Amino acid sequence: MSPAPHRAVRAAPAKPLLIFDGNCHFCRRWIERWRDLTGDAVEYAPFQECAARFPEIPPEDFERAVHFIETDGTVSKGAEAVFRSLGQNRRRKWMRWSYERIPGFASVTEAAYCVVARHRQTFSFFTRLLWGNDVRPPTYFKARRHFLRALGCIYLIAFLSLWTQIDGLVGEHGILPVAQHLQAAHEQLGGNAPLVLPTLCWFDSSNAFLHFLCAAGAVVSVLLIAGFAPIVALILLFVFYLSLTIAGQTFLSFQWDILLLETGFLAIFFAPCRWRMSAARDAPLSRAGLFLLKLLLFKLMLMSGVVKLTSGDDSWWNLTALDYHYWTQPLPTVIGWWAHQGPEWFKKFSVAFCLGVEIIGPLFIWAPRRLRHVAAGFLIFLQIVIAATGNYCFFNLLTIALCLLLFDDRLVGTPRRGVRRQPAIIPGPRSARALPLSVARVAVLLVTLPVNAMLIFSAFRPEAQWPQLLETLREHLAPFRIVSGYGLFRVMTKSRPEIIVEGSTDGVDWLPYEFKWKPGDLNQPPHWAAPHQPRLDWQMWFAALGTYRHNLWFIRFAECLLRNNPEVVQLLARNPFAHEPPRYIRATVYEYRFTSWSEPRATGAWWKREEGREYLPPVSLR
Image (cartoon, rainbow, N blue to C red; front, side):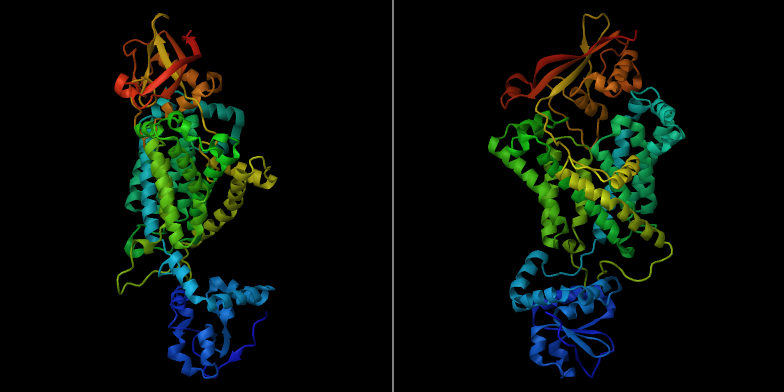
């Protein structure tokens, strides 16, 4: 099918004119969308009002299709009229070019237009179902403000949480002193060390500087929450937290630390180029920045679901994963204990629901607004349930913050009468100040998109080999944590080894150290720590899955206990050797498990355990 020869009219309009059926609800809705896309470049009018101006066009033609009349009098109709009119927008000239130049494009689109035109009532129903009564391009000005302020709150939580532990973890007398780490890196890598480990601690690794990084991060987080200089604030927050992540070594190697850095980095290119975020003076939205953040959410959720099914762990396929998860996860909550007591059918339903939301839900991130809002609701609900049953620090809050970007401004409310609706993307020339940022957005998109695509593909094909160019690019980006893969609980842990650390002054009588958050005392219920992350307690869970030879930091931890280092001891709930350090330290692994529904009431115990193996034999400073 080829386009019909163009008709011409004598009374050519002064501005290109698109004529539609004013009695068609379907037409009126989509004309409003096109009006937003073309701005002042095209005028729109129902044929009931202007048909008399163009006697060359039969009235029945106006009823069957839209007509586009250009300033030279040329008339096009149907799909051609649509593409020619939208092509008046300088950013959509490709639409007109595609219709005119790509073989077969015109035939296919004209056939599709005829189908829609003949069944307008049906398509009007699906339009209302998927978009509602407003199909105009969505705007995200409110979502941007809410997201950036939420990100500021999460940064604040992360900095304050780390600040309370930093001395004991990586301080001068901590478990893994950062100064020793950087010195060893410099001896091994030479002048390349700062590129492999990009941290401001190369300039100063003292406790005072670590405190400065945490304090400065907290202050800048408050500035971001208040909306002051968002781009500058986000750059500083990224640099500070990256510096602390590198300095934190194994204690800051969690997926949510990396997710916070990737989110914070991409947010730099989404934030408004203003000194103050204000609803009264919103800057144009960055399409590239919004796309990158939505892609991050898509990657995070899709990979988290897919890797569970491609890991080879049958518990995800037979829906028994929650038989283990509630009591084997690092730091469960009391609600997790209750959930474990639930019926088997509900646990299997919960696993299926989780996989469905994580694998199917992300696809609707790119769907029409109503489907997108529903998907966002399910994603947020899943995060709330996960947060209720386990302590995952700020991970769930950060994921929910990304979900805020799926809610467009129309969900909050229609603009007041007389207030002009802001277009989705404000066209026109950019200021000289905004041009470098626009170039940077495009550069980040071009650099990270192929790596992200390969990461998502690797979730489906874990054994797939990376192309050498992409592998090299990923290696260069890896130190900065700005493009990463995700997937919590790829393989479900089916037992709970728990390390109990004990000290003794004589090698005969042993007293246990008590941690603040991890299980120890059988009569202590699971604690609620989130959004704070007790990083030593978390590492103890990982250490129990291996041996102390695989967790060399544990040897340093035992040494700090033997010296009664105050910075390390303050990370614990109780030190049984507060007045005099122990002479010996040992560690034993027990197999822990939740008690049944009736046992806490009868015995007061929330946990039961069986003695397992020696983890660390008795050691002393000698």
